[in-house]
Image 1 (cartoon, rainbow, N blue to C red):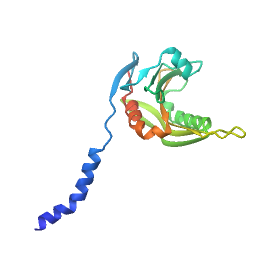
Image 2 (cartoon, one colour):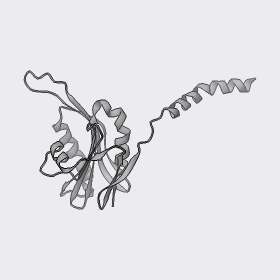
Image 3 (spheres, rainbow, N blue to C red):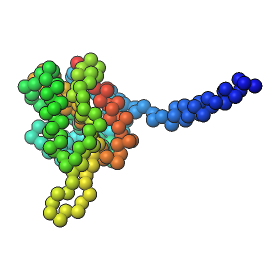
Image 4 (cartoon, rainbow, N blue to C red):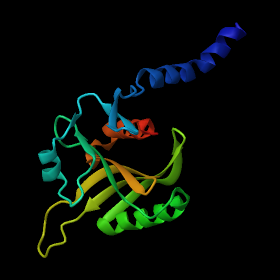
Length: 190
């Protein structure tokens, strides 16, 4: 009689474990995609590469990103950009401070979720994960702040800085954060 009572004591824990396993988020399905000869990234199913004119319209800048992928609604983007840099891979601690300050200056409010240097596929990256807000600061402005979830990784490759950016509306963070993190972990620089 004592044995069944002991088992009943653990039943709530077993049910909780089964519940958590049953409703755990499925792993995002990523397709290995070549960005350059020496760079591959896992891109989610359904994302498509923007053509050059689409990139120019969405990301107007003197230096066009290497690639931009977007989801079917166009609300979620992943981009890869490259620019010359005088920094080396020994400067990641400095890069972390510089880019964190730059991000803080670019937005009205920034809530950092992660800010560190991580090794992914035998390569170090500066990682900044945050939710940004841009408020309408015009006199008499009454628009709601624009909030975005962003995960950005930086890597030095030779004399180039490579920037990987995932962004989506902040209200979709819970849905897209696991995908963003999986994509960033899939980056392979040869």
